[in-house]
Amino acid sequence: MSKNQSIISWVLRIIAAVILAQTLFFKFSGAEESKYIFSTLGLEPAGRIGSGIAELVAVVLLLMTRTAALGGALGLGVISGAIMAHLTQLGIEIQGDGGLLFYLAIAVFVCCAGVVWLHREQLNTLVQRIFKKQF
Image (tube, rainbow, N blue to C red; front, side):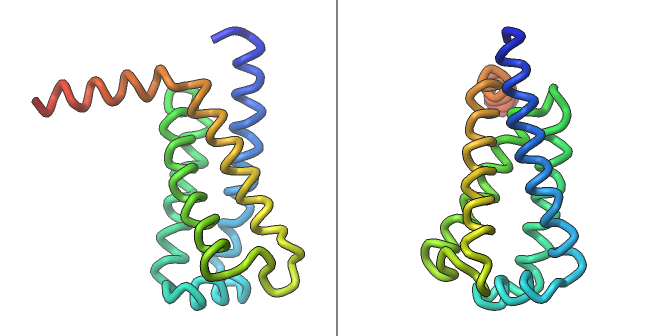
């Protein structure tokens, strides 16, 4: 990876990690907005706590260079669920937030996709190791 790619990777990873990490307080503390979201989805409290744990793991993986691709992939999975929930059940705007949560989810998606692309060789190596051991 070139120096510029490494810098871009760090910027994308930090942006995604900061956005994901700041939502953890609300999920784990049972903030009213989080309860509203997951109640609307029929997933309160297990979905709120479960997605919070997955996001916490994604944050940790994103911030370690050796596991950046895995963190990006996990982040993509978690945030794809959030985006689909916005598009199908929640709507873009939640409780008068002007769409802030939706737009933050889009930002995380773009950042994680960039991380996965930049670190695609890590994922390729991981997949090869997994399938080599299973067969």
